[in-house]
Length: 368
Image 1 (spheres, rainbow, N blue to C red):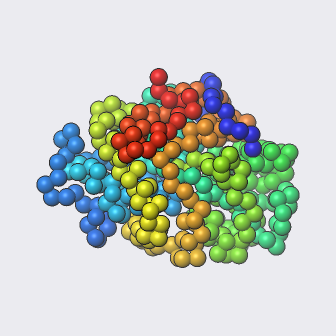
Image 2 (tube, rainbow, N blue to C red):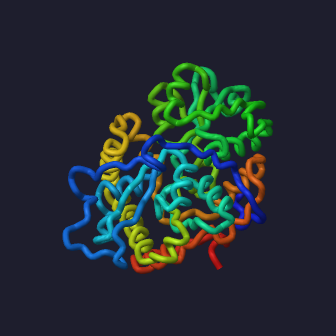
Image 3 (cartoon, rainbow, N blue to C red):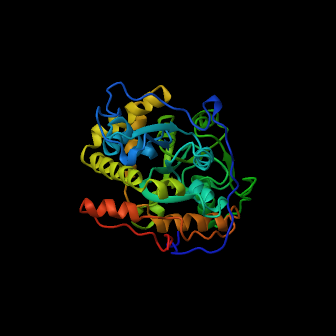
């Protein structure tokens, strides 16, 4: 994979695949954990007098910062008397819709929908304000059908969604092998089968796909069904780091409530530090939050390997987002966007400085 560039020019974006999330509006809301850690402390002072801030994330291990920060009350602690109200989403486009509609103020999300949201609004509604996670994406295959990377040619490989982060990464990898695939149809030297992560394990078991390029914990679910990890996407990136989850904010909310944004970022930084210091407790907390959010926890044979492959990070790894956008352009899924201004890392760097940490870089894609 070529080294990430520092700039991309011009405009437009991946098609927004708007997905409704049932009768709960833009996202489902889960009750706080029974232990009360996420509840507002009695007598706590509201930040700027604001009653609440609406936060969105996926009930997925790649959103570990949000899961643990919610479960352990670490985000709420920094918000004081301003209540953190959480909504869960199953797809990036739905979360972007919610952000655009004001249904959430701040969210954890993958790079492709963040790019979509920024370009679709012509840079007027979204900013990336921090990093959250790196890694956690693997190519898992049926070892009886695919024994080496060259054997992927001619096989049926699932990705989560047309134009999503993993779909773009897989299409880019295919191109680097010298193989041809039509990005829109998924047909060619490899059959790219767009399959929701929820049903990919069943598709694998039935033999309708021979493998999948997917995030955790879907990758580990496939391994539990007898699949083999053929490639870890981290191995394709410099320093084995690439953005899988960012933190985004509505620009208007950032302008009107900068102290609340700083509090959320401070909570995120403290959560990531707590995760690094307490990996086993953090893993248990993330799984407890998943149980509260979706009704059941992950079994140990899925949770343990999945957790090991994800790295929480304050750094948004901006150069890798730039490269991922470039890969979408090369795949024909994206016209070259002007991403200048997609990042506003001023609030995060202020928080990091106060914590005695080094500032993070926007790869030339920050606000002027």
